[in-house]
Image 1 (tube, rainbow, N blue to C red):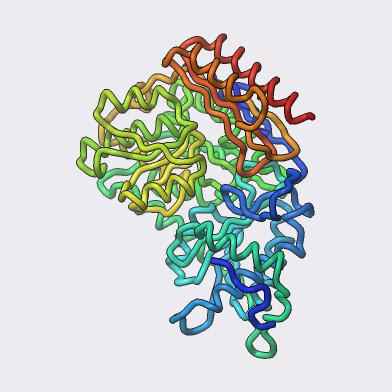
Image 2 (cartoon, rainbow, N blue to C red):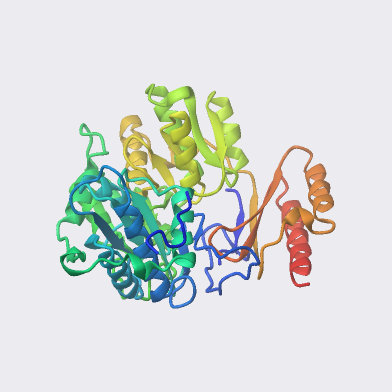
Length: 491
């Protein structure tokens, strides 16, 4: 099994009215906002994210985000009747505070809010469409530690809002007097809680599993990461007939992702072997990603899931253009496996939003990331850990093979991912000696590996990815680049 070292730690007028762990353990650390000389920004690669009660995740900023979104929704042409927004969240303590601030901001602009409580991120994309809402908002920092929180916004179509709309929201928050747009009297919005949202989502997810199959006879170890899926995930698998051993289903506001879930699949592996289960399913805090393991305890990550599903879909004639979308973070072993099957991979920028954009542009139906964001565009508008797990299980049923045999479709190359903490963003290619160092390493890999370096879109980190046949060599190269960047960014 490949070794993977991972350390995770349209503009409006201003006022129109007036490294260090391996394979199965990712360590997340709290971090202050990154210093930047660029204009103030709220949105990263996956919405707004940061430490709760520090910029940008403060109540005043969140309230303004709600007001800005509410203002923009009210400007939509051809939309009659009351405007409404669905808000869901994960299980973080700060979710209560942010939920109230967002609701207040939206209400002040005349937007009605429907609060659905803890629900996976993809569930909000689904409900935005299902409940005919103008938008859906998820309050979650996904895989981050509980001290962090974030905001992801979906449009009425269930897809994450485009970058242009994010810029408009930022412009309003930073450069407009939003109080000049406030509604008064009977035009103020109201908020209410919706009780049946979890049931709607459970039925939706179950309907993605072939009706000719059940999960009868399967024993599944399920780790919910004490997160948003702690109720709905066990229900989905149990109602389809599986015997489910559940962990990570006792959230207390501070234990989300704490040594559990997709970031720490070792617990899932341990329990699969302990209970002699057929497979393991490990979700992250907002359940938009999944890491699995087979009955032998071997990890099945996003690349394996893509390979298994792409192969099966091609044989069934339901993989358009015999192509799916991955990112630069996917293992080169995935390319080698798909080349043998005459399946093409299109590479998108990191982030499931970018994967979805590429899929929609070219009418692809399968895409995802090694981290476990898997998108089946015929079913969901974003990564859905539960749907991805069910798709793998449907292949197990169709082929009557254990997951260990399906997993063997690809062999990973050794891979190392090292994160370097930085305090500001500077163009990497402008660093003296950087281009020469990267070229030197590329030449030494002799076409049997690759190096990929990028800034994180959600944290103050530079991510260094190396792959190659010689694990010792790529680890040395990774440390060399990390040391180089640490020195350059400390001056």
